[in-house]
Every structure is written in C-alpha cells, then in structure tokens.
Length: 316
Image (cartoon, rainbow, N blue to C red; front, side, top):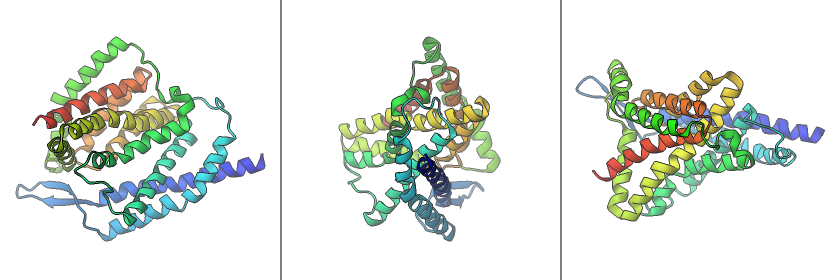
C-alpha cells in the first residue's frame, strides 16, 4: 500500500510538471506569431518561423517540462493504473483529466525531439501519408483517451444523446447561426475594436492544404476532407468536451465547465483573429454536450461545420 501511494504521488507531481510544459508549448506557439502593421492601420497576424529570444526561452521550457518529467510519469502512471481495478471510478476526476493532458504533452515533447533529429515532415507533403502526418496531434488526443477511458467511454460522453430528433434540429440551427450571424455579431466587431485584419493565417493554411490535396489526386483530397471533416471533430471533442469539460463540470459546475473548455479550445488554435468565434463555437459545442448528455451531440455540430467548410474549399 505504501509503495502504491508513492507511485500515485510520483504520477501526480510529474503530471503537474508536464502541465507546465503544456502551458509553455501554448506560449511557444503564440510567440511564433508575427504582428504586421498594414497600410490601413490594422494588424495582420501571421505565423513566422523566425526564432525570437522569448520563443527560444519557451522552447527550452517546453522541451524540459515535456521530456524530463516523462521519465518519472510514464512508469508511475502505469503502476498506478495497473493496480486500479476497472469500475473503481465513475465520471472523470480532475486527476484523470490531468493524467490525460500530461500524456498528450509527453507525445508533444517526443515529437519535438524527433523533429529535431529527423526534420519535419517525415513524409513528402505531396503524399497521402504526408497529409496524415499533419494530424498527429489529433491522433494522440484520441489514442490517450482510449488508453485511459477505453473501458468506460460512457464517462466521457460516448453514449446515445437525449432527444435525438431535437438534437439534429439544434445542430442545424447552430450551424446556420455560425455561418450567417457569428461573424457579424462576434468576429467583425471584435476585429474592428482591436484593429485586426480579418484574414486568418490558420484558415489560409487549412484551405491551402485542402486545395493542395485535391491537386495531387482525388484520393488525397477525399482523405483530407475525411480527416478535417470527421476525424478532427471526434478527436478534439474527445479532448475538450469529453475529458476537460466533464472534469471541470464535475468539479465546478456546468457553466465553468463550458467556459473553461471553450477558452482552451479557442486558445489551442493559436490565432487571435479566430479566438472570439472559436470561443463562441466552443460555447455552443459545450452546451450541446451538456444539454443532450452526450459527446456525439458536439461531434455532430463540429463535423457538420468542418465538413461543409472543407467541401467549399475543395470545390473552389
């Protein structure tokens, strides 16, 4: 029993250090943004490969807090899980949510090291495998959820939604709102207030990848549409509405659970121009997951939005 408690403490504190690495990795991504003043007196935000001093500090911090604690965390986690019988816990505790994000950060640190040794990309950007490689973060999101919650997926929301017929109507209504009103009500006013250009480097990147895939072959184009339209929503909803929102709701209530998961959902896209609409989208996704008591409700809306968007890019 004493040894088991020791492993649990090691897993807990090393996971906390890995979460510092997670925060540092977000700061690293934001430090790579370049703010360009336009002739119209606005700010255009772009991703830059130039290394700044601040970016270098965050890179070292991310590398350290993603690699060093992993040597303690991985064995301690498996020792802890192995001695916990199935069904001992219901729902998603803050501890297990932390374990999940810590595992994700270990994979992020491993990819940093691999790309330092074997520069990105590993596969040709003109190949199907090259497109799949760009979705490695989403693969990890889903893989670690299956590892930690595979025997109790219902706890993270993989259950039949309540009020199925009403759900389809609500998802379509939310999609129409996000398509025709969200920019008018949220994106444009906030961009004007902060004097941001509305062009998003993230959207340009996604549309460019879809068009590039289509130009290679129909197979590559279809794979890209399926990955962005279906796989990404399943993976991201598993992380944000399945694990994070469920844990936050259990601890702080539904309102803070939805707000917290929506904030991080907007932040991880690393685009100040897109943050307000993504945060609003997160609120809608969080509401769907909570009200219909199923992660499939959020996945439906997310997949509908992504699929139609990439199909528009595809047929441009």
